[in-house]
Image: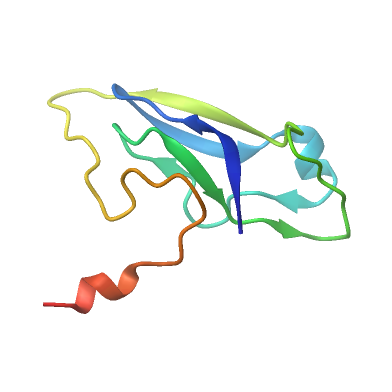
Length: 99
């Protein structure tokens, strides 16, 4: 796991994060299970990095791209357990089972 240097997202659009073509062509995947950024989540993204072969990545290197999706209807902003995160966070799935 790693995190982006910049905060990304939107207060009015949903977003998705993907590896760019050059990164994917080297066999590097940056977001394997959770590419969706909810409307209202403007955060440092946690990257789920998987590689098919060894690759060197340097701080500040552009490895991904983000796209934005226009919402229709009434907006419901993200207010989940990862709101306000600014670094890599361990899973909080256990909170689903706590009273």
